[in-house]
Length: 251
Image 1 (tube, rainbow, N blue to C red):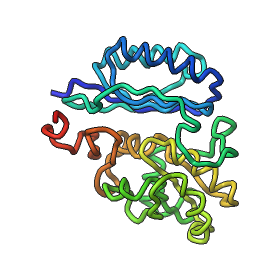
Image 2: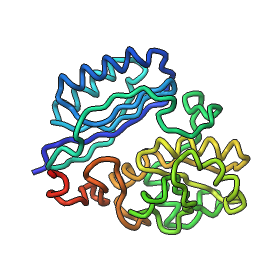
Image 3: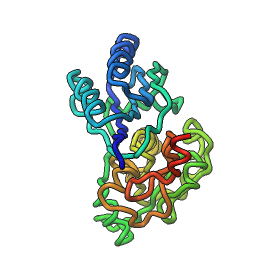
Image 4: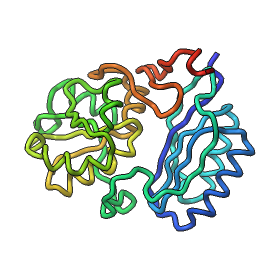
């Protein structure tokens, strides 16, 4: 029986009180007996948490009391066992490392396309202006190997900080096309889409909510395989069920 609620969410927003926020979040998470990872940086927060539904939603409500995080909308999935071994709350330089400090989503996002629109464009092979549509996987190579969109650009990067150099090397493949950048939950493709636009590509979108939101809204249309997640579930199928065995999860 799936009784553990798993959530993931992030928010690019200026955070000046990183250490104080870390302390408050750690205390609250421990009091609720949650496990997972919460990263805090001056550019925002990024979290993956699991526990009872009441505890997880209480923590989200606690975060939403802060005006900076009032609009958080976590993606949810369920598992039979706790996929995390401990609770970590860390202050980092970036909530997703790109090593390009000029890329600041909090100052303005790149345009996003929702799952239903992305599917429609892929169904017809072009966007609403008739431009050819391609998908760009911004994840690390080992994640891509678990599953990706059919025909997606995959530059075999080993860490996200390699993305800018790879993008420069493959710019020609994206010229005159509409590019949908995507990742697990949206955080990497949010930075990626801004970078690609700053490179001079005019028709670039981020997939709103990433692969997990796409699974939730339209299933596996145009997608092959599952989606790697950074916990002991290992990967999620398009119905958001864990693909790791129960023995693996409870080991």
